[in-house]
Structures are given as C-alpha cells and as structure tokens.
Image 1 (cartoon, rainbow, N blue to C red):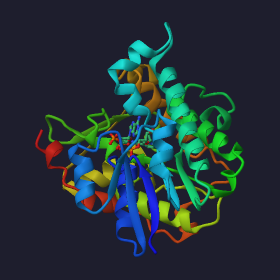
Image 2: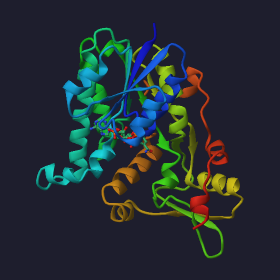
Image 3: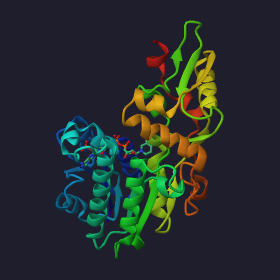
Image 4: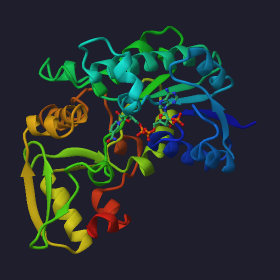
Length: 327
Ligand SMILES: NC(=O)c1ccc[n+]([C@@H]2O[C@H](COP(=O)([O-])OP(=O)(O)OC[C@H]3O[C@@H](n4cnc5c(N)ncnc54)[C@H](OP(=O)(O)O)[C@@H]3O)[C@@H](O)[C@H]2O)c1
C-alpha cells in the first residue's frame, strides 16, 4: 500500500519542491495543503495527481483534518505572506512594529502545525522548515531577526510535545539564488552606461553567504531527512559565495563585464525597503558573523546525507536571465 506525505505550502517554492520529489518516488502519494483549491497553482497540482485539500495555518481544526492518514508531514510557515497581508497593519497592536506582529503570527502558525502533527498517532515523521535562532546564536546581538527566531521557537515548541519530539526533524533553507535577482532587490545586477554590471549588498564583498537552489534541491533534501533518524537538523545549503563571487560568476555566465559591488549600510537597506530591508540586511550580517545556521552544533550539511547540491555556477548556466539583461 502507498504511503502518504502531506505537504503544507505546496503552492510555494519549498513545498512545491517537496511535492515534485515525492510525486516521482515509487510507493508515495502526495496530499497538498492550500488555502484555496481553486487557484491556478492548486489546480495544476491536482492535474499532476496530488490530492489537494483546503486548510489554514491559523486554524488547527482544518490542519488536523488535512493531516489525517499521513506518514510524513512537511510543514512550512511563510513570514512574508503575513507581512504582505494588508490586514496585518490593522491587526497589530498600536505602536507594534509590523515585523514583530509577523513574528507572533508565524510562531503561532508553527505551533499550530506541531499541535496538528502531534494529533496523528500513526505519523512516522514531521519535518518542519526552520531557521537558526538569531537572538540565541548571536548572543543577543541580533534580537530583531523575527523571520528567523519565529521558526526556531516553533522548533522548540514541537520538540516539547510528548509524542512528537521522537518523530520530529527540521530542515533549514538557505537564501534562495533567485531572491538575488527575481525579487527586484538592489542585489539584482544593473547595467551601467559603460556596459558593465554592478550589484548592491550589505557587509563585506568578500565574506561567504549561504545560498541554494531551493526550488530544485529542497525536495531531495526533505526526502533525505525523512529517511534519516528523527531529530535530524539539516542545513540545506547549496553554495557559500561572497557578493563579489556572485557578481563574478553571474557576469562570466552571461558573458558580460563586471563593474563591481557597492556596499550599503543597514540604515540604507531599512530606508529603501521598510521591514524587508532590516530582515534581509541583518540576515546577511548575521550570516557573515555567526554563520547562517548560527554554527549550531546539531546541524548537519547535505554531503553528510549523500546529497549533491546545485552550485551557483550551475544555477546560472541553467537559468534565463534575459529579463534583467535587457534592461
Ligand atoms: N526566500 C528566501 O531566500 C528564504 C530563505 C530561507 C527561508 N525562507 C523562508 O521560507 C518561507 C517561505 O517559504 P516559500 O518560499 O516556500 O513560500 P512561498 O513560495 O512564498 O509560498 C507560500 C506558501 O505558504 C502557503 N501559506 C501562506 N499562508 C498560509 C496560511 N495561513 N495557511 C496555509 N498556507 C499558507 C501558501 O499557500 P496558499 O497560498 O496556496 O494557501 C504557499 O504555498 C518564509 O517563511 C521565509 O522566511 C526564505
């Protein structure tokens, strides 16, 4: 009889990668969780053979129902859906920063996922997409990396639940390669009048930052975590490259000339991109100083599970950048 994986966030980058992996795995059926079964993305998964169900991370009853019969549950929460929701401004406490409000909601969603997973007695593994606890690993230097700490505290909660902690594992996503250029961030290479390309970033141009081809590699990583012993903590990093290496590799792959890297302050990032600027900027600074995974000794890396990850050079070779080259 087939086994069942239930994928929360199937219409997103991480969940989509997990679903693609398990659709190709013999003996597995995939059930996808969405807030809206009528969306084009949900319908496309149904077309591929996924059983789509509606549930909301804010609603434990709906999650418990979605998880019935699961052998594996993959759970991901999305800080940025909450950040972009126009209702979040009206729901937050007076004077509260919007990112702190998103932290509270995302942490509660992580707890809801864990409580719901704990209600499935025959469950074999609950795998949660987490990040490092920045406040803890920076010894209090970075206390407002809300999109990281919310996920790390949800891990602590899941591990505290009797009956779930021995079925629990986590996976940490690195910064997505495509975030560098598809999110219209200042990190997108820009052509100058002299024909060379420059990027803007934060921190040293020569220190490594953790990236990965999450859309492609995350699913196989989750599968490897599912096959490993419980309490696995995989940092699914693909490549560690500096801003200068990013620009070098990208320019070489596109046969264009490199201009250079322009370092901008955290204040500049915060002014340029309110909310997102601090979370992204501090995320990079934390990564440079403390390691993206906080150098948590419990973390393992893909080669330890026999995984081959996509390098940035390989990603550039297989990606169509014409949209930004034509500007
Ligand atoms: N971008 C990066 O570089 C990076 C790096 C590390 C970690 N992360 C983390 O990755 C997470 C986002 O993952 P992603 O990129 O896979 O997301 P994504 O592509 O933006 O998709 C978001 C997913 O979340 C689902 N979702 C959102 N709110 C929901 C709710 N209330 N109930 C049920 N489902 C809900 C959406 O489903 P429906 O719309 O179908 O309901 C969708 O499938 C974020 O928390 C971020 O902090 C990102």
